Image 1 (tube, rainbow, N blue to C red):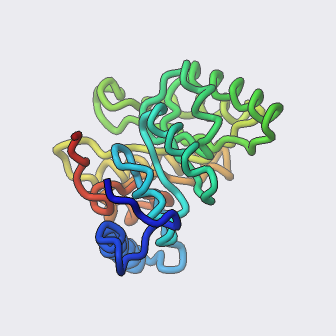
Image 2 (cartoon, one colour; image 1 turned 30 degrees about the horizontal axis):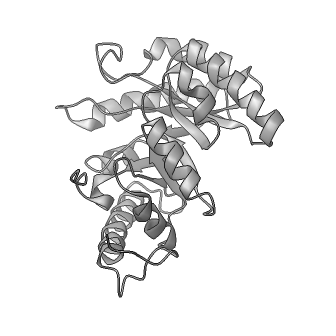
Length: 250
């Protein structure tokens, strides 16, 4: 196995670092152009690089390229990477479906959870965060309410129905150790993303009317980041366009 420098690798001597630098620059250029086109040039969204299935070495390379926020969707994988890269100044975002029983593990490393979609999970996260604050002095956990933009109420891809958002928001806001950040959604498969993100923007506006500090919108992936920015996304979750295809298991 090839060994790379512990500082993340020099693009001049590390082909993978060079590849990531080119891909990252291309995505950043897309974000900048979309923000300018939407009149948001001075308020571009934050970039979360979704690193699921990719090795910790790639995250180290990304950190050397200036990436500060990374996303994972499986607790076991995320916990191992966060432990290995504890010396780096990274913010870890949990972006996948989360079982309540995993809350205790996730709050040990995650700065934010983007998939809060039921009261049971809110209560589990609140309890776990309070314990972690007492034992390790962690900061409050940012919580994004995942909203289903599909007719199935999130049966397949997770998410709460828009009508359930106010109740979830009240529970999060009332829970010590949790910070109500805003909303999150994934555009439905096989349909244009614009109507979905317009719907999410409306859900966000209703939430902000009751909770002015919960203005964040986590939306937009590799294939639809421009549409997400157009409708107000503040956090983008980009994976394959930066990291490439899922590595082969050897």
